[in-house]
Length: 112
Length: 115
Image (cartoon, rainbow over all chains, first blue to last red):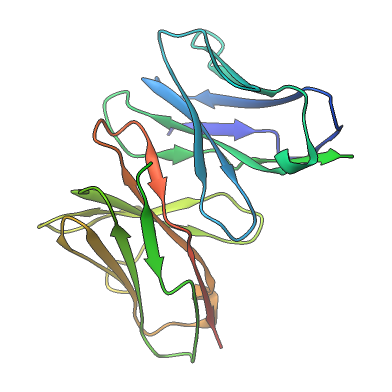
């Protein structure tokens, strides 16, 4: 069965640094991959989508890469701010069926 | 962007009672909606896919007789937790896909506490 892995431990970084989160997957060939942000007690909020034929996607301070050979996506937040502290989830989709499959999520803590 | 609402946002009930949670797409139609459950510090676990006008599709291990799903219109899906028990206490979230089904719009979630 398909499996998605995200850094299980919280990522602690200093304000201004670049945060890099990882999403690895196996037994799946997604047509696209998405990243969401979830704050405590709230539903996830969509951030970025990257398709299988795209290597990189940017949106303001966010950058996502997608390596279908490595079966990995990296999510970068540059010039991080304490307000970026949240849990970030990756979701795989497409690839023949549309059953959204989430990773466990990685908690990011940006210290001032 | 598209908005999905959930009601109620919080509910506390006694063990053995049933609780209904509503999920509405406010400015778009959704023939499909997804219901998730999230325990503390865990990821979202897909419970079922709600299909307008037909039966819901449940994920393995989810009891369809306990978690009743009704998708009676293009903007409303309901999840009823029947005969709730303390172990059903969780955060329940619904989502609806965009037109091209490439983005999920999530509701704000419903916190259920069963005493």
